[in-house]
Length: 160
Image 1 (cartoon, rainbow, N blue to C red):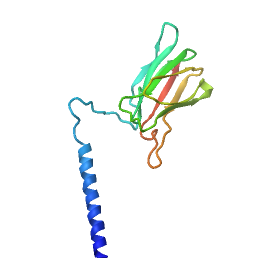
Image 2: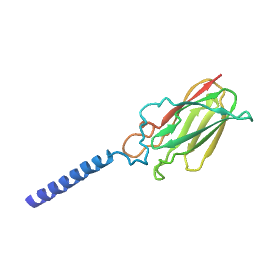
Image 3: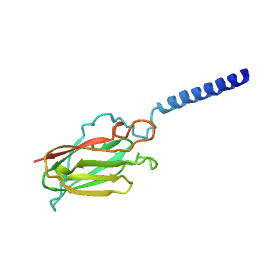
Image 4: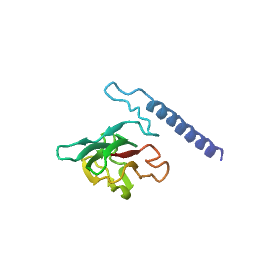
């Protein structure tokens, strides 16, 4: 019985040491050619971007979805003008972790859910009501926080 307790203690000590080493390794400074991600994913970054109006009268904006963020996370569009959101996964997004973008505002002409992919996808709509409308990822692992809780959310602002 003593051998079993000693073996369990040794295994626990080994895994504790491995965890500490791994945690310290993760805190190391990035290599010079890597850009450090300084995003605060718990709140909107404040990056407000106005959709650009094409010569065809369509507002267009590209949105990247990465590891628990949208970039930009606050877009501004004009009411009653057609919109094209071009959405895709960012380069830092894992191919093993699914992400999506959801906007549920049928009263304002926006009601869609799209799974993000590496290839760009276009969402077309015309906003019919001014206001602020949330966009978010609803994916959630079996254990832990949802992607939205980890910061993968944003806002669509519809203005006159």
